[in-house]
Image (cartoon, rainbow, N blue to C red; front, side, top):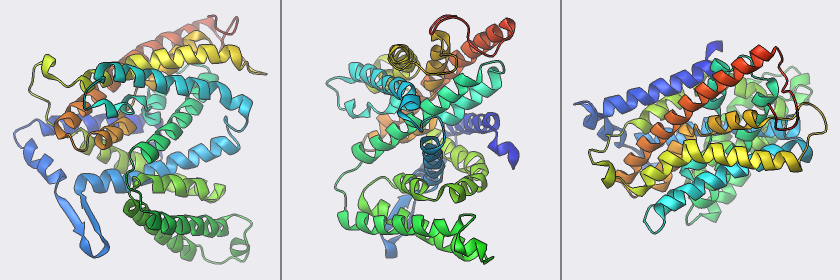
Length: 399
């Protein structure tokens, strides 16, 4: 199971799953499988009516967002974001990496019905980005990976807020109240799993606590779904309130299943669309907005904002990031993939044809960013290897 915790393997599985899904959807039996994805598995006695695709994107994907939230909390408490001085530069770069892609998308879609898709190219797939860096960047300094991780975590936080606020309508306050109760109880019960808790010191069995946590997880997900807020936010909330050490152990257990089953299954399902049989001129502007904004918008936004931020938020210690380092992070940030596919589904839920085009655009845009980042990372890694140092040389933005 350990190989499924590898950034390289998880990125490879995601890519293979997406390619297989896209290929299958365009074979002779593809329409039947696409129709099966939209088949509903209903539980009318508890008010659940979701298609198989939505059970994956709304249900299983909550586990992925739980892991993201735990990582976010860790970085905020003991990691690279635990102080304002540490968080300032990646925060500035992350905001630039959201604003520029969104602006490019809006430029393409201004005055159209698909303008609400602006969040799609703003996301970064942390698994893919770190996977590409791990494969091609053996000699890249550790500071670049740390900066990428901090930026991607903040990018995920922005994506979570976008999903919570821009893809929620007519929220049921009663259901949200019940969800809040379940979330509070989950956080309190999780503290019984801390190493020095009365329960653990009393050598009592842990399985009753685990059962209670699983039940509270399901209840939280159910009430968040019923509230009208996207159900994956349940995973975010639970990850943020769970006690840190038990949360770390939970992530260690869940990560192989997330990387090996949940994310590839989502990538397969999301990518399972028929390639539009139209001329390029007939494609919706949203297609071009996503295709350009992901690889181009991210590298421009992150590099420029990071460069400006580097002048404002000079680090007190360590070697500053060079412009080349920032450009590498920018190209890696253009790999939107998982969260971009989810946002595409949410933004164009009422426009299935545009959603299919958007899926293809996310795959192509992320693919272009992967190729660019692989080339740039390899070149920079070779540069650092030849220089025989793992630290950048010269001034703040010099080579």
